[in-house]
Length: 434
Figure 1 (cartoon, one colour):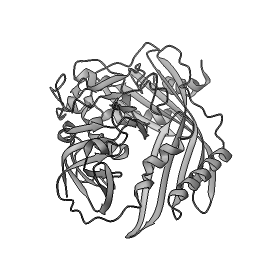
Figure 2 (cartoon, helix red, strand yellow):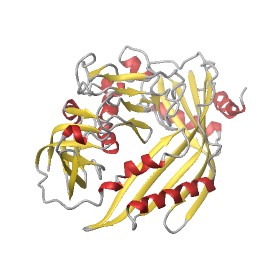
Figure 3 (cartoon, one colour):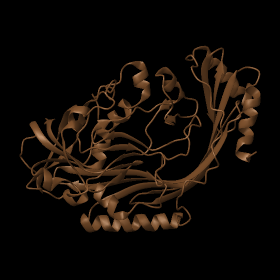
């Protein structure tokens, strides 16, 4: 038996007399980090361990979880309490263990605190080549995550992966005050490509002239990959089998029908080799597989875990996700939107004239379930004949995600990593702006 399973086996033994089925999930994180600012850099290192428990007792499902030192019987007591008010258990845990998996590939050997410091110092220098007064703040964390699952039906599975999590923020003075740009991404690769970071921080356009152009009305709007990712939160929610089971999904009865623009193909890729959210099996032990959620705008499938699959009379898609001590729910992993084969990177030439949105300050007032959105974009940039003409401060986009994504008229020819997703620029017709 793997040493990673030993503590989990003790938890299962503690469950034997009080539950009909039980499952334990273990997480071990070993990480290094560097916090960087114009004043100083702070290195860090650490390890974090935790176990989660799910059990079926009296036909109901209960959960518990803890980080740090685990006392099996305390974890079991918490799960028993959760079962008292838990949902009805409509499924059994899997009994077939997955084939042995090699670690998800990654390149961590070349990353050290010194190499990260050198990387960020070089990035700061390139940023100041663009804006001499710009100040970079960043946090980069890298290391290895290991996951173990075993249950009372004989299932056991284990995998590990290396990850790098990077967050960048740049502050620079503008004519009307300070301007801030941010960019975050997660990957199993090494450090982010510097040119990609500079592209996503959009520093090259911050020196434009203030415009008196009015915002209000229906406009053509180009979204950067970072802004596009906010809009796609409704897609993550809408494709969940949880909403379908609850009777509240806007995509109910829409499988096989045109929902989005024919220019959009959206994939969920849990097997992506460089994806920080990749895994050989989900949080219930069901094997993952890559899925096309929307193909040329046509809706293909919902995502299911064991519970929603049982409620909807179908099979799990290997899409279960959960934090320790929480119930499972269907989740997207590495979301990918196919780039165009032809055209430009940022879609400005194809769009002609309109508004470029590089950042979303807040997304308050929307509803991810229905798809309605209200996005505060802060500073936006006006362009004509594909060229930036100036900027304006204060811009609100409103509408419905599904209506907006039906109006996509151009998709960029390159993907950028946003969080764990791979997204291009997109151009939308007739978006309400105020």
